[in-house]
Amino acid sequence: MNNANMVVNCTAYKNGKKLRDITIEEISDVLLEENTFVWVGLLEPSVELMRQIKEEFNLHELAVEDAYAAHQRPKIEEYGDTLFVVLQTAQVVDAVVQFGETHIFVGARFVVSVRHGSSKSYAKVREHCEMLPERLVRGPSYVLYSIMDFVVDNYGPIMDDLEERFDKYEAELFDRVSEQAHLQDLYQLKRQLIKIRSAAVPLLDVCTQLLRFHENIITKDGKVYFRDIYDHVVRLIETGDRLREMVAAAMQIELAQVTIRQNEVVKRLAGWGGILAIPTMMFSLYGMNFKYMPELEWHWGYPTVLIAIGGSCSWLYYRLRKVGWL
Image 1 (cartoon, rainbow, N blue to C red):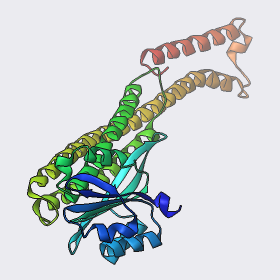
Image 2 (spheres, rainbow, N blue to C red):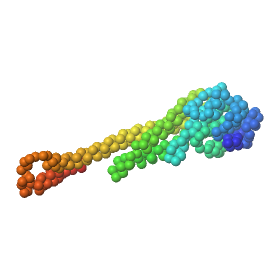
Image 3 (tube, helix red, strand yellow):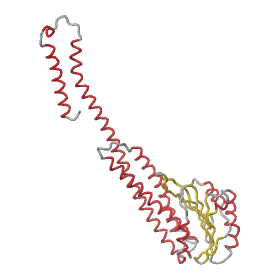
């Protein structure tokens, strides 16, 4: 992947309006202009590109190393006058929730977003921001809000999809016609819910810090936007926790039904075993080496024995069927 594909956008804004697209080399000169800020979007950049970005914005080497390597948990860190925010992105691919990462460097006059793994493009975020110059005039703080809001909003449809799949499994769980087991599906569903929760919960701390601190970057009137993200995350976590409890309960019910079905099989085998025990006992009696067996000399002895066996088996079958064992 060359630099052209790695640099998704590199744009200068002035007084809330798009000024022009610029190159990485022009960033230092553009930042000398008043009331301007630069928004750079990168997609899985190379070491050389990240080194160039580090020099242009004077970023801390530890943050740059984290942004290049990825595999970070959601967090916010402060490096001098720059904030480093890590978000976990998610989207459904082939009925499986796949996660990626977005690393954001935010300064008083710049925003750099670095995407890794599964993530939707932020082109719509840029378009939305550029349509609202009265908000974009707040600068990097509004861009940070827009990206975070976009990431959190994408969790909603994923949660709806997981809830819809659970409703399907739950309906089949109590359907006597369908005996298809969904224990593995429910486990995977619970696992994905836990991953989404792990991605969402740290955002509460991120939003709290943005609401309380970093006045040099987050404007006073812009803090209300991060409170809105905080509320969305809380609702998302509550929905996920509720669904996760229901999935856990469904798994217990599924296991109980498996046990019940196994008991039904055991009861049927035991019932047929009891029925077969009667003729087995009678025939084993005839197999013994008796010298004198009175019924052998009786003309109706053999039919009587067969009738007795059939009657006993029929009676036992009736009794077992009545109590639900057969």
